[in-house]
Structures are given as structure tokens and as C-alpha cells.
Image 1 (cartoon, rainbow, N blue to C red):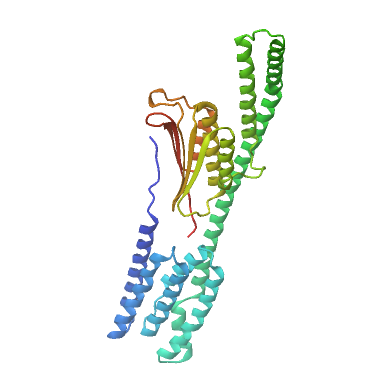
Image 2 (image 1 turned 90 degrees about the horizontal axis):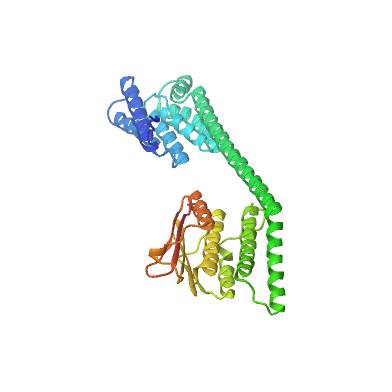
Length: 375
């Protein structure tokens, strides 16, 4: 039986921290020496407001830092001497988000403003005012909050770097293995297939020059040799595609359509939606989808027309290739290596693929590739 740890959603955790800090500050402030009347109400509101602002510390760490600092100044002016726990949590969140310089500047400013506030709004000697300000924000606690945020930020950065290193190592090993397979295939098969192809073509040529009838088996060997050469060349090109060659992306799709037309296929390209930048991996995968679909259409489908449609959506790129070939719902072809490779590419990007015969006749390839766009 599998086991797993229960994970609290980040939003629920933020609310729990904010409410807990609010309860702590209100309880501490109201249980100790505090002002009465309107100043008590004003200070209590600031204690609660500064704490509840922590809910947004992940989304807007600098804004929360400013709000909690101002609330600390406000409730000290109202007469509350409560440690600014909400500001310390905000310091931790801002440093963890990478805003170290702004956090240091804001903290230095707050350390200056708090004693001045105590001098202005409190009665008594200056030493007592500085003591009251230190009770609101102690440098030791401030340094501890800063150090905790920086330590976690560094730990997360190292974890991300380790993950990237693992992915790059795995990708490099896969590329090396792919190139090794390509070399092995080239060394072991290309020479023999080339001999079969050349010998069969010579035999056919000689027979025709002599006016003899060419045996069907010899013609079949000749056709099989040509097809095997094409397939092997395509396989080697795919295996050697380790991203060292200039990448093919969406901007090269019109060239694929023109190439299909040159092969006698009435191919058209339609682009819909508001164009926007897509990740390079998505562009390459879209190119490969169109390439594989048009290649299969030209070679195997017996089609006369093909339509390529690319649709830019806010969060996805949709690619669809249709043909009017001989495929029917009752006689669906078995998926080949090209279709399997296409599905693997799309699945790796978190997308979806639908490849099947159309109603009536013809074949359709429909892919949806998610696109994460920066805000």
C-alpha cells in the first residue's frame, strides 16, 4: 500500500500564519500595558491589519513588508509595545523571494523611524524612548529573520540547480546514446541496404535494355530497397537530431507545406489567433508534428489534398493536419514509429494528441501543446 505525506495548500498555510500572528500580537498587546479609548482601538486595528497582510506575502512580498512596517510604527505611536512579529515574517518572505537589498533598506529605515516615533509620541527621557522602540523591533530578531529567509532561498536555489543538472545530464546521456545507435545503424545496415538497392536497380536496368520482362519479385526488391533507404535515412536524421543543428520551429512550417506541394499534394496552411511567442520546445514539436503528418500523407495515404491549421490560444498552441486519403474508420492503420514518436514528444510537453481516421475517409492529426506565458 502506497503512502504519502499530507500537504497543506499554500493559501491555507498563509491564512493560518496570518491569523496566528494576529492572535499572538493582539493577545500580547491587550494583556500587557496598553492605552485606553480611541488609541486602544486604533492600535488593535493596526496589530490585526499588519498581521493579516501576511496572507499576500508570497504574491507581493515588498508591499507586505511596507504595510507591516507602517503598522508597527502606527501601533507604537498609539502606545503598544509589542514585538513586530508580522514585520519579521514579512522580512523572511521578502528575503526568500530574493529582495535582499530592499529588505535591508526598509529595515534600516524602520530602525531609525521607531525611536523617533517613540520620542515624538511618548513622554519621558530619550533612553526610555529607545528602550520602547527596541521592544517593538530588536536587531537580533531582525537578523534571525533575514538569515532564515536567505538560508531557505539558497537551499531552494541549490535544489533547482541540482534538478537542472540532473535533467541536463539525462538529456546529454540520451543524446550520446541516440548518436551511438545512429552510428551502429549506419555501420551495420546502410552498406548492405545500399548494395541491395544498387544490385536490384542494375538488374532491372540490364533486363530492360535486353528487352526482357522484369520479374515482379525483382521489381519488388527494387521498390523495397528504395523505401528502406528512405526510411533508414529518415531514422538516422531523427536519431542525430540532438539540437546541435539549427532548430526548426513554427517559422519553418510554410516550407513544409511548400515541399508537400512540390510532391504533388494540394497542401494549404491556415494560421489563426493572435500570434505570440511560444517556447522553443513547443515550436520544434509543432514543426515535427506537421512534418510527420505531411510525410505520412504524401507516402502512404493516397491523398490529393491536405490542410494544416495552427491556432494560437492564450494558453496553448493547437496544430491540426487533415487529408482526404484512403483511411476509413473501419480500417484504421496501425500506428507506426513516426506516430509513436510524435505522441512521445507531445506527452513530454504535457500536451494531448488525437490521430485517427476522419468520418468518411481521410486522416486527421490534432495536437494541443500547453504554453506557459510570462505575465
